[in-house]
Image 1 (cartoon, rainbow, N blue to C red):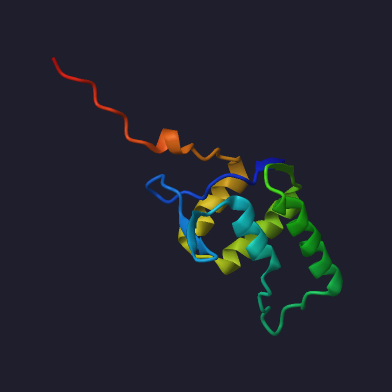
Image 2: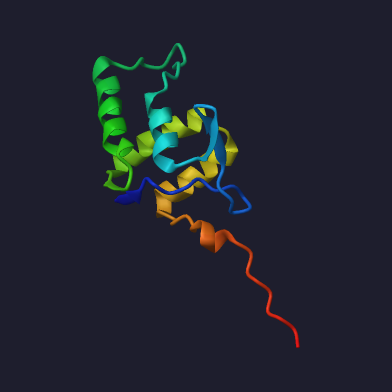
Length: 123
């Protein structure tokens, strides 16, 4: 499946979710959220099998693949892994829009499309 990893993460009102990077507020982008989640070291429950070096290397290669942004071909298995990691790392306000983008490749509206329409002049 082809996913546009340059898509902005939008809130319920359709506005981009902001995050702070290097002291600046910027719009959250799908590839940044996904790469951060994939690279996170999430502890497993004691009774669950622990990640192997092979598992971690697989995640590292997936992060490299999507980090370039743009439209990237990903497998159903890779999408499942991304969703698992994002779900463990982020709150509902991020998980929901990310899942929508990963499941249906919903194209985030441009800033121009987010603007309120100009009312028609009345005569």
